Length: 130
Ligand SMILES: [Mg+2]
Image (cartoon, rainbow, N blue to C red):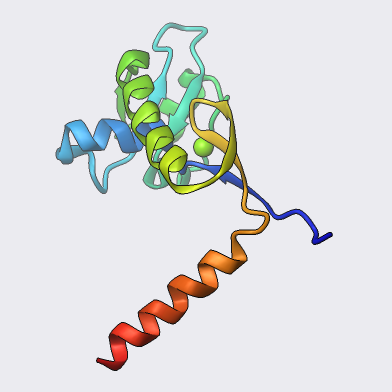
């Protein structure tokens, strides 16, 4: 019996990516998403914000001090759920077995898929040879 091959997939800065799909002006800018009250925390932040030392789960107040020019958004769980479902559909159609463990995390069982991946790679070689 062959070893199992499990892929852990964690969508990168998922909430920020969703916001950028809805508003491209956010691309390339420091973005903080999370609670905006005094006790709020950062749920997600862009790489541009991370260069200032900001990270998720940090108090929003501290994040704003580190990166005053950041664009702060409260977030929209309904929109994120919608995009998460779209990603889930792609995964569902592409692999035989998967488990969704959060809005942006999946475990994909690719055991046995090497036969198909070899076939795809062979097909690509054939196409490029034409
Ligand atoms: Mg993630």
